[in-house]
Image 1 (tube, rainbow over the protein chains, first blue to last red):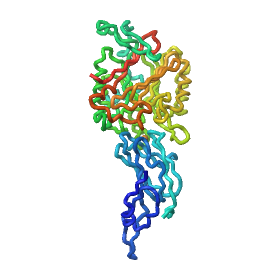
Image 2 (image 1 turned 180 degrees about the vertical axis):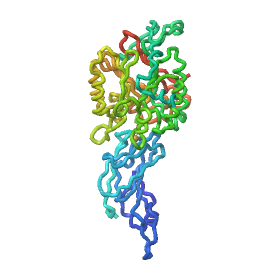
Image 3 (image 1 turned 90 degrees about the vertical axis):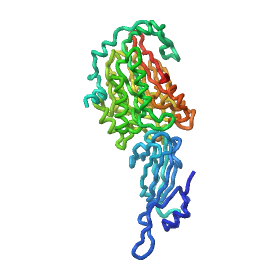
Image 4 (image 1 turned 60 degrees about the vertical axis):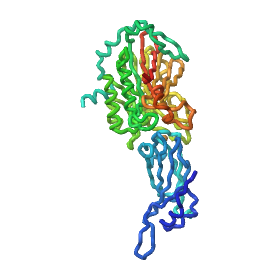
Length: 134
Length: 324
Ligand SMILES: [Cu+2]
């Protein structure tokens, strides 16, 4: 259910010890930059996790990510879907087949969302403090 | 832009009433009536002589639905072509409808160019068209702003309206906004309090003998909760309507014909002009039936004629596929 994409490469690029993260599909999107003291740092805490939409379901329906993660929803269905926070914090336009939408989850918490075209489709993002689990 | 205004005007005011009245001569006894599950159906015409001179009823109109212009996948990569075929079917009807209704999902993704294409094709019928949105028509980032700007003239609230034609009272309800997330409830569509209050006022004082036609995109009864095929507060709407002697509810959304009778109220979902969806619960999810072979597709697509004949009460519905 959960796809972890090349964690070794991820660790290399990010220069972080992410191996113990035990959470879904986290990729470092940030480009490492050389800072003045000569160490490698990550420009931002940007990481990406993916939720696939297929057969009118979010997969995984529950996703746990560290704070600062960009969650990307990708529509693999023949029908469009829309991703919407139940509190209205974010909402995507209709995502056509192969379309995607992303949202950055900055603060820890539990965020329920649904498809506003097919409201019985639901999921949640559990955001943990950035250091947790690493 | 005069053409566009004419095509998109929703209010009855812009109807060419004289043109309509011409169609209202009393029908001959050419139509055979049947009952199928309590729903009046037209079985056919009494021979070719009768067909040749088939007289129009009090009021005949055509329902089209779910044209999904912009859809581009199997089983129908070209829904513009099948919409054009639907319009050709209408143009070939011996009794020309007074007007058309489109029960939503005009476009696939609420894009102006998709509506442009749909309206251009539908214009080929040379008829007034009454539109309501499907959820695909209010799926822009601003939740329906584009649809309402374009189609919402002369409507109330978020697009609902009513009008009277040929002695029939038409009520166009909108149940594609404010879907409730399916956490505590089933995740069904909703009409909402504002619209329901409007509806109650709209029918107050009307004679119970006035035939009522209700247009709505999602079904006004729960066909299949697991796929969201229902409207949570439809019961309240029907409560305001049940005193009428004839209420005909025409829906789209599920891309197949399913009917139900409840007292004086008959419910009818319609075929799409674009692609079929599976029967409730027969597939892991709703959505286009991509396995339908090209040669079979038109069996699943169609248009519906609704024909009122004086003294018959409920209208006769005839569904015609796009085959042939
Ligand atoms: Cu959806």
